[in-house]
Image (tube, rainbow, N blue to C red; front, side, top):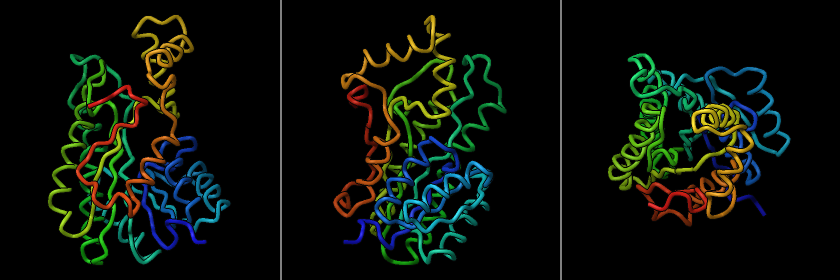
Length: 266
């Protein structure tokens, strides 16, 4: 029996890092027989290792460099994906900057603009490029934005990140109301803390900021505070994406789905 996504093509931005959210999302779809497009700022040895893992899972894989802060590169990413596989059926806007942690009064213009350019403008550029292709193909599509618990709440020393993720939910809703008529759904996934490579940097920073003696003590506190008893896993987010991309979720659009073990409930 063919996998649920056999013959479908998924593009995931910011997916060239091992143990990252993007890799976990592609692994889930590769296991369900999707064609996979890896995209990151550069296609380096680490991205090639991500590609090799997906091929080992049986997926047909392309790796395409893209700086999502540049609209022309986002357009090229979609064009090259269509040239390689014939269509883009699923786009996941996962590329993001989350490690620029500074007190609000110390964030300068360059800091602000860099985060907004990648996290929010990049999602807009890729969404627009993919949606145009999906509309032209006339077969609908799925667009999923990887937002954050920071799209629902606020956290210290992350003003640009929090603002960009709130904006991503706004982008999700604004695009959903216009693209639904074309059979294209647009949703956001809002994970709580996930210890990827990026998350590890945040763990170190916030353990010091919040006065914990060790990173381990900070992580143990996250376990205690979560109703499900642990922080998020990358596979939790990947599972949510797999459902939102499915036929079963066709009537779900414009939503910002918490994947937080009950840590975020609005």
